[in-house]
Amino acid sequence: MQSRRDLVKLSLAAGLGAMLTLTVLPSQAQSVQLLNVSYDPTRELYVDVNQAFAKHWKAKSGQDVSIKQSHGGSGKQARSIIDGLDADVATLALAGDTDALVKNGGWLAPDWQKKLPHNASPYTSTIVFVVRNGNPKGIKDWEDLAKPGISVITPNPKTSGGARWNYLAAWEYGKRKYGSDAKAKEFVAKIYGNVPVLDTGARGSTITFAQRNQGDVLIAWENEAYLLDKEFGSKTDVVVPSVSILAEPAVAVVDKNVDKKKTRAVAEEYLKFLYTEEGQDIIGKHFYRPAVSAKAQAKYAKQFPKLDLFTIDQAFGGWAKADKEHFADNASFDQIYTRK
Image (cartoon, rainbow, N blue to C red; front, side):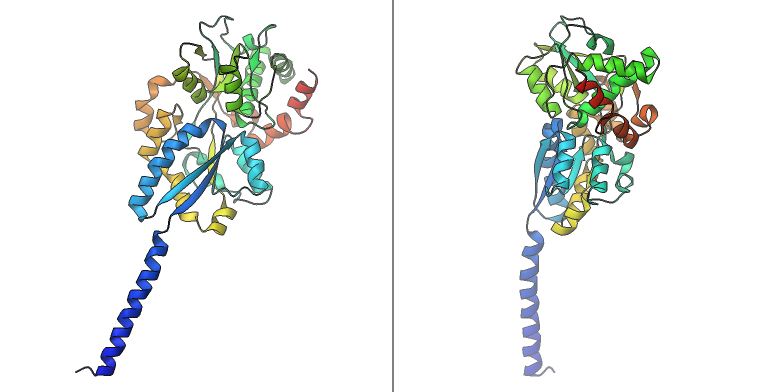
C-alpha cells in the first residue's frame, strides 16, 4: 500500500505535469507569420495560395499561419532581401535573382534549386504582347516592335526580372532571324529606341499601358497579359509571337532568416504546397503554367497557346552568363540604352 507521502509525491508530479502541459500547448498553438518576397505580377496568385495554405497548415499542424506579401521588380526585391528585408521565402522572377542572395551574404545555400522539384520552379510562363483592341498597328511578331512609329512598353531590365525575360526573348528572335549576336543587338536596340519609359517592374508597365494609355504594345508575362484581357477585354488583345522564352520563376526558403525566426518548417511546407494538386490548380487558374501536375496541365491546356519556346540554358548558357553579357554594368543593355 502506498504511504501518504508517496500519494503526495504522485499528486505533486501530476500537478506539475498538468502545469507543463498548460505551458507547452499554448506555445505550440501560437500563430506564425511568414513574409513572401515576390515579383510584380504574382500578387493575385499568392493571395489565393496564401488562403489555401493557411487552411492546409491549420489542418496539418493545428497552428494558424498568416503570410505577408511584398512585391516589386524582381531584381529590386532581391536587393531588398540582401539589404535586410526579413523574407522567409523568395519567389522571384528568375533564378539569377535568387542566386544573388547566395553570392551577396549567403542568405541561402548554393544548392537551393535542388531542394524542390522541377529546379524549384513550380510554375512556368512565357512572354507575349498586349495590344490595343483590334490591333490597330497590325503587330504580329517581334520584328514589328522595331518598326518606326511603334511605341513599346516594357520595364527596366536593371530592376525587373520580367524585363530580362522580355529582352532575351527579343534578342534570340533577332539572332535567329538575322543570323548573329551583332545583328540581334542592332535589332534589340531598335526596339528599345521605341520605348518611351522604363518602369521598375512588370506591374508598373502594365499600369502605364492599361491605365495611363501609353504605348501601342506591352511586352508582358503571359499571365499578366491574360489577366489584362480578363479585366479590360474590350480594350486590349493578346498577340502571341512566333517564338518566345520559357520563363521559369524559382522559389526558395531564405535559410538565414527562417533559422533566425524559427519558421523553417512552415516555410518549407509553404513552398511544397505549390507542388500539390491544390497548389497547381490555383497556379493554372491565375494563368501560370503548372509545372508538375498532369491534371492541372490538362485542365488549363486550352488557355495556353502553343508556340516555339526556348530556355535560358539553350540560348544563353544559363543566367550567370546571360547576366554578365547583357545586364551587368556596361554590358549589352547599357550599351543599347545609353546609345538612345
